[in-house]
Length: 388
Image (cartoon, rainbow, N blue to C red; front, side, top):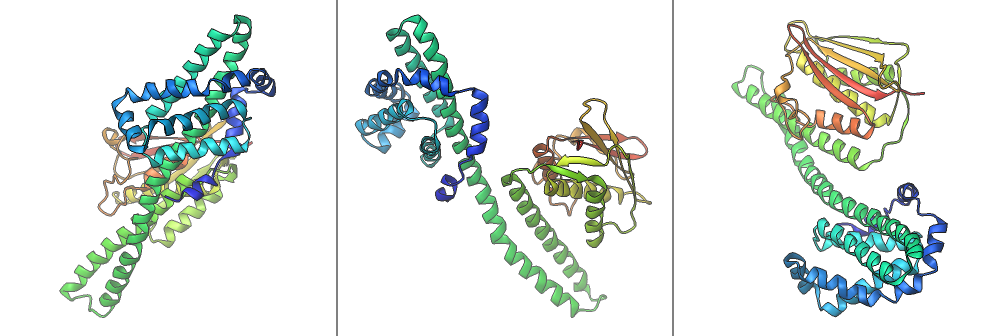
């Protein structure tokens, strides 16, 4: 794993927004600052308490025994506790906490034990505060200690999540990259061989089948790459014109010869033409929703897709886009499966299109619903925030 990249990826701005919600103010830090020496003087006692707590748990005892002597771990914990009360929550301390979160992933520490550790920190601080200070002083210190511990949890947990997700994403990305080149070469050679063969030759159809299979693999690799990139990239919200996004995606489908024989109509309400969202996410969303509708419509003798939009009364800040197709009626019994990765009811489907659409909606605070229309087809409702 590229830890240098992860270390440099500390999301300071996001942390600042979250910490603002905790309301850990300069006045709070001043309250704690008056008693810093007291807490720092207890760092060795804390380390003993912490060690005793975790050495009694079989899973963590194995980890502690594997990584060295108890005295070394106690020194590390004592340093952490001392820095907690001797430093401000500046970028240096956040970097220190971030590295700890990454280290927990590296040693395969269960996140539940990390959460338990923070609970023990809170418990220890509460106990020594109540034992050593008058109630009127303790009641001022304890809320600040809680906010400080919560801030540490935010940083270390964020690092842990980012590192574990990065592992999964890198594996998927690596697999896609390793498969892409061989599949492309195989597909290209098959097409070249087929061109030298007469259509009536029995092998011609065999080549057609093999080319179709490699094309499906190529599409799947492209969808995996799209999913990974969308997952890693933060959404940047802008105003987007629905009509432009939809028409561009229909042109893309047409270029891929997926609209042949399909009648498509667009009826967008003048009041529901603009949405707020990430432009790239929206393009992927509508491409895959429209692709799904078009593929379903091909089951009809006269394939038809209709796209419309209306403002929603509740909630009033949203609009609804309806995509209707007159093909096979959706089976609501399978509705929970259709957004799962690699799930597909189509022989040539990658099983990622609707997963990409769902991810785009989640990132852009949208929703999606399917409604079977007996005797007619299927409606898909997409809920998005309207632009101001």
